[in-house]
Length: 111
Length: 114
Image 1 (cartoon, rainbow over the protein chains, first blue to last red):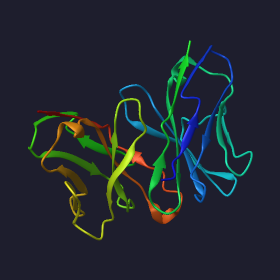
Image 2 (image 1 turned 90 degrees about the horizontal axis):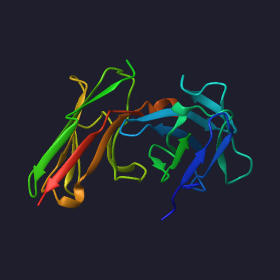
Image 3 (image 1 turned 90 degrees about the vertical axis):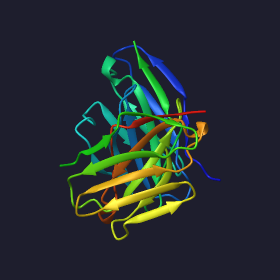
Image 4 (image 1 turned 180 degrees about the horizontal axis):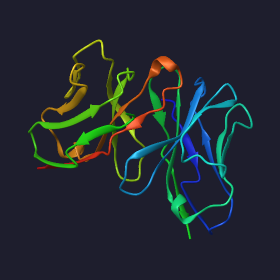
């Protein structure tokens, strides 16, 4: 069964450093998403991406965040200058029609 | 108006019992209501989803009941098993817009005791 994959599974970084989280969505999906989940809290929408551009973003997704689909398979989330409060699980999701399939997540720890 | 309210926060059920989790929403433009199951350290996995044109949908031991006029929907897990112990999230979105970001509830931590 096709699945969304994410790398790395855990990323530790120093405050102020840049991080890139990578995702490989399911191959025939056209809509891509990033969500985050702070430990013990609900899953929050960050951004949606369709046809090589951002279709919607939340207020969390400020100028420090960017997304890119550099080739036909990868979908990346970049945080330019990480803050302590960026520590969370980051989930990538993709969909073809209605159902969004989530990846296993990347745990980002900012020290 | 974008919020989805979920209750209870935690739930303990005996093996074989019925687990019931409730959600309420405000935005009448929502037209897709999925339930996700999440195990520790894993991503959310879709359990079952419903559209507002039906009042109930059943898949195996999992049933969604939907009340459009009350703007509420619930998940029923029949014959609950210890393997069902996980966190359950309801969500809502507007698929008619195409991009359908999911708005999640706060989650319910279910523990099924043997």
